[in-house]
Figure 1 (cartoon, rainbow, N blue to C red):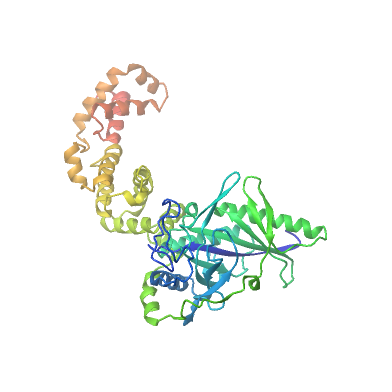
Figure 2 (cartoon, rainbow, N blue to C red):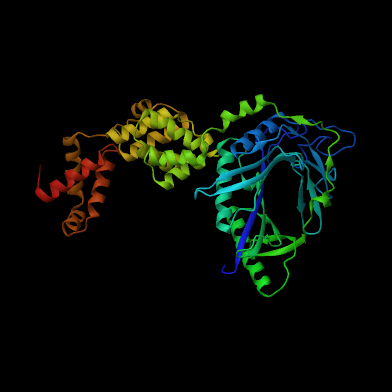
Length: 475
């Protein structure tokens, strides 16, 4: 944009990784039958009393530390009053004046630091299910512990908003506070965007965007809205403060409602919950759990292990991947081969399982042994993948599987030479094609040798012997 600066701030809600809800003992399990995970407290019955979930507080403190926030010594909850069909109490227990953490920042891959205004805890609402001519309400999600992370209006483009979300999701997963699964509603984002004349300090009228169910959707919605606002301003018309929905199918934003201000929610202190002090012992307990930041881990994977950016990003993007990779490298010090077999064959095995990587049974030590045996020529590529498949399902050692399945690679030159001669004699036409310049024909013959050896022959040795026999006669 030539005439305007884009100003973006994001409000991210993430579901905390707790077994029970924030103010009662009901389960937070996903996809249970409708209205099966509820009790009088989360269903909003009169006269019931909430009890604060200590695990939710611990995870909130850990997040505040990871985001470099100042943690307030005392916090309290407030009632945020509004009416919605799936909000049974007609108010939400949240935090407003005294959040858990504030005035922090997160660093992006570009090196830019985006300010964090606040981190606060609150309960989720339920879920409305809209049918053709009626609606249903499922209260299972009501009372699920949420953490809202509000950024400063520091982002200057939709792409930077995308990078912020990517960095934030990676951090939250890395410190173990949320699974950040957008498909399950564990991570949701509202975006505020405005335009201002270049060089001016006064911010323009902001518009809030909702209903964006992917990071790409956030970027696309912000792109559309930026150009919509530019067109409105260039026509000397007024931008209205409102909430708009992102229509992913139509590729446009549409008006939902006028934007509420904080006074519209009539916040007041929650009378059924006392003020809470944040003990220094809790901060001390959570600080080590923050550990190394994903960005520092990525930089280390690039410099110490010599990985490419794509491999490093994939490994660091999943904490379990990074932990497994580093553990395997301790048993076989060839990081690039470990990464290649992890990101290739092992994840292929994981993707066939219901629990994906969580369903993999192989230990880093046994995995490293398979890679080592392949590198040393004890197993060829096909045999190594077979061993890996068995080990992934059982965690049997490579040695045990090799012995049981008879998978040791054959590197006996005389035995492979005999098989090569058989393959040549049985495939005269292919041999002539190879002699005529068709280099790929040799791979067919290698395949025949592998077939005859039941996959045990050393393929590199087989190719060398085939070429030598065809080009120069018998050895």
